[in-house]
Length: 77
Image (cartoon, rainbow, N blue to C red; front, top):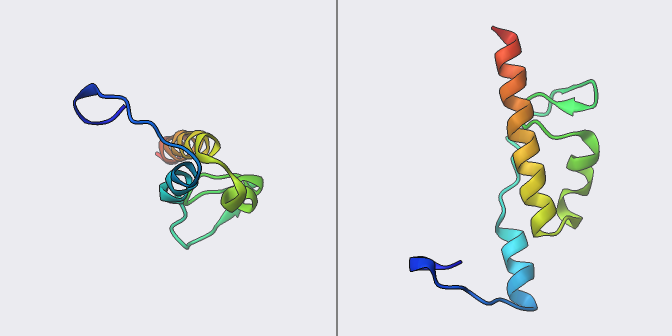
């Protein structure tokens, strides 16, 4: 939905542009442990596939990465 609860319809190139707008969680400091980057929270497979992912998959990946980072940070204390 767009501003003020109005639906926004997108198609074709707009969908491609939306997928590109999702920022990668990469912070350019890769430290891999057990198949995961402890800095961005993504798996090696997610890092490898990032550019090919569509919008919903990128959103899900960012959410999983955030949950992993929270878990790693809480385990450190």
